[in-house]
Length: 84
Image 1 (cartoon, rainbow, N blue to C red):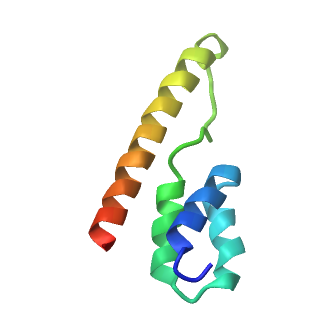
Image 2 (tube, rainbow, N blue to C red; image 1 turned 45 degrees about the vertical axis):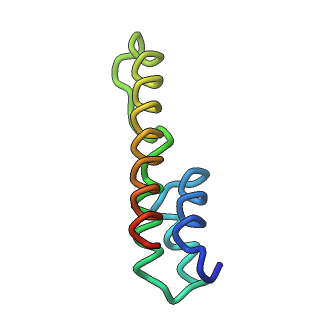
């Protein structure tokens, strides 16, 4: 995982929530800053929210996912650009 903490944390956060991903991955790196950045970015992308109105679930899910994936790509791109 060394040198790939951010991307690994982003990927793990898409499968499990970002807080459990941070806890899981913390035992494999000493680069805490990169792990925090990755899990914060990884909080975007997938839907983790309650939906109170069942009739709006489909529309809400689509727009929420589009917005989150968009910001995941943009912010990850910004991170990679600033890192280099």
